[in-house]
Image (cartoon, rainbow, N blue to C red):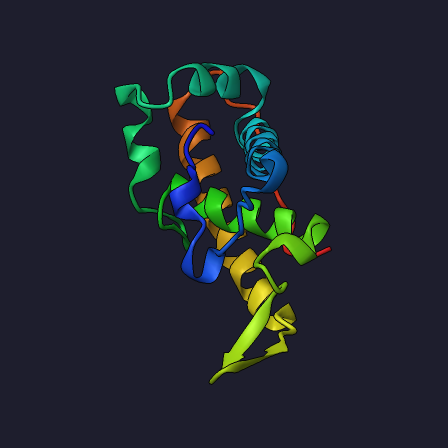
Length: 154
């Protein structure tokens, strides 16, 4: 993984990395693939390639900090990617998110959770952050060619 790592996927972003038969590596590879795809869409191929080869380069430090561009706020690149990668992963691997799928804990029992509204809110905040990062990137990096995300959850 480039910006994200396994330990980021806990709490409200909880994803299970099952150790059985190497399934944890399969999950990690899928998350890594989603992260690379999202970075390429965020920055464009040229800038994404540069970023992926050295994400800790000092020229990228501002991307990891909160940004306010016009009325758009980003908590930072890690938080934006974490939300988007989590939602994309959940969409294709719903049953793998926890041992029991996405559930709402209720004492010693659990009931299936319908997180649609929470997911839309998370996605909207992530898109705001995505756009703030893109505005900053378009002013700062000559090779920026990112794709703007739309405010919809599919």
